[in-house]
Image (cartoon, rainbow, N blue to C red; front, side, top):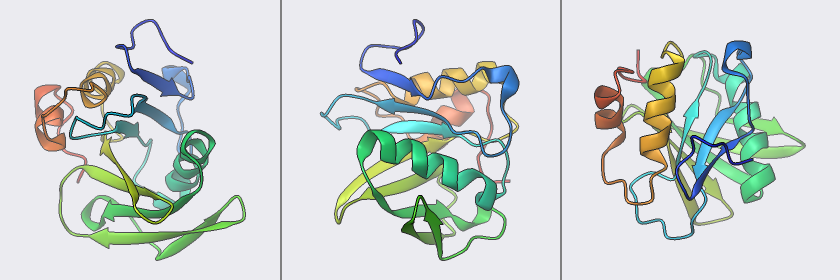
Amino acid sequence: MVDSDTPPGSQHLPSVDLSDLRPGSALLRLETTTSHEGILDGAWWPRSRDIGAELPALVTALAEHLGPVTRVGLDAVGWEGLPTRIVVDDRVVHIDSFAVGDDTVLITRGEEDIFSLLVIPPNATPEAAHAAMAQAVRPDNVTRAEQILIDTGTGSAAP
């Protein structure tokens, strides 16, 4: 569903009432053009640092719109209890973790198709999260994730 505040070429997936967000809710915004000209392909606002509660909803939402997700790359510093794989909707999703502190999550669909998502800190205000998501999905965005978070007042995704 495209929301009226959404810039052309992007959408909220799924549409969620911000006042009702809890751990395990996937608030996700993706660039819907095929150009991949920008640095980021979308943004994800998890509601906690518990990857077991957050990642299944993200993978399910992405699979509905992109197809099966095979691998997720996360910053090890930003999450609690990272496993090496999880099973979501009867599919094994491998998890790679690196101590990079780059405020992104990398999603692999198939063997080589990689999507880079800005990770909004769980404690961000709805206004700051909305602004960061809007910047991340702009097709012409050349601003790195860390700078988007600074510019929008959301801070860093890593604690």
